[in-house]
Image 1 (cartoon, rainbow over the protein chains, first blue to last red):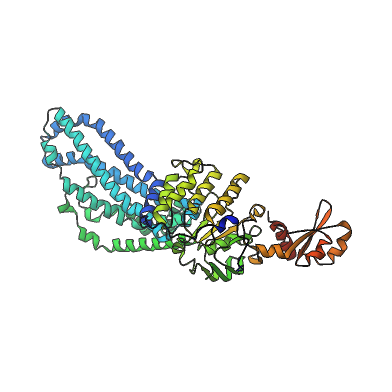
Image 2 (tube, helix red, strand yellow):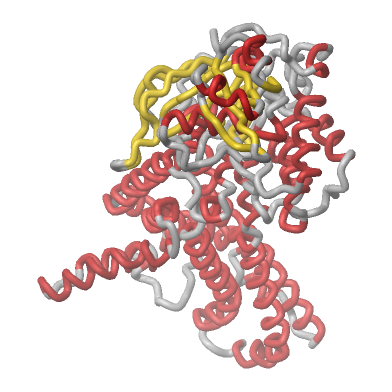
Length: 313
Length: 290
């Protein structure tokens, strides 16, 4: 096989030697483009939250018919209730978008490393100089980076539009908008919301998202089922054998979110005053957070290892 | 340094041995055809070379360990693993954006130039393209990457003859030069045997035959024997014998060309016939080459 050959095709004879790669092009950015790839492939990542926001805005538009009457009625009652009533649509808006965030994250993670094996495109992605680590991190960035930022930005926009809409309606019916604006701690509200999104919906449930990512890289089909079944099985065995529910409540606690520092709040009201309700120290020093993150990192590392070995499903 | 150097390459899936001690050395600038029946270990060997599967034994591709350094290796190596591995949801413009974004040796203008010769639209999604067009797209991308090694595993499977011919024509005319190395595993030997500079046959995870094309031309002879000389021809111990239109065709490994010429018409065997003869000698001729 190593003998020099004269049987070289004619056309190859007069070709130039390999020229250095086009040096003028920008340096490669595999992580950035891998995230772009996820957004191209899974457009629901942003379409679903935008859809939820649009729907909410539409519903609110219809709801504002009652706003002037409501404001007149409220002007006499006690200030705390008044404040709560004014804040309610903003909190509900944020709540809906966070719900969309959780749903999209779960749905996305359960398919993230499965889709490319199902359609065999993993063989194309692996033919490019992008490491398995980069690919898995790009996929993990959807629930941990893209969706939190998107949810935050979208909530701000939505709340701002609700505010404009309410103001327009109030002005149109001859009422003052002063009290509405005065009762909205805009900066505090958005800061607290960002904190809430990052801690409660990104960091705290991290092991759940990473577990789904890992199983999606392992299962040949029905990744979500494979992710859920062991949880149900362990919880079931524990319940029947030991009459306890530690595991089930542990998982539920991760899914629903970290609630301890906010336990002083009424359950249906989104906290709006950072000074009294945020206790970052409490959260950041809770062993639960760090154990959860360590488990999440272990799941991710396993997912990277797994992708290295995996071909098409 | 050779482009590929393998020594005692071994790989088992459970009890099935896919590679059973493969030794292989491929120099730069060769076009190596890898021929073997289904399940012979071709794809496993290529996957090991591409860093897609772990293996035992020694393997160096462009001086690197493929399993440990796949992502680094892929800067200098390209592969088309199979037809239709481009994701169906992606747009032509997106796949160009992506490869341009991650590959330091991708020349986008070149790829656009290849695509301009086809009917592929930039706004089309892969799922809207025909199978032949998807292969054209993949080839346009691969040919625009300034790689040192290109690996093709059944790249034209399921395509019609026009696309198949076009595929290898553009590969030879627009891509190959003596600095690049190409590995092709295929069943469709007849159409592309003129492309190869070297050939290996692989069976049951072993390389059973390895030869350069010009060596094949000088060494192997196929003789369509005159009916009255058959006994004399058989006495010369041919590798194989088959019947074509009622006449015996005997394949010889070496021998005196003049002596054989006296027995009948001498010509160089096709790769497919050689394959069948080699496999037959092995006693494992259950899979045919084409």
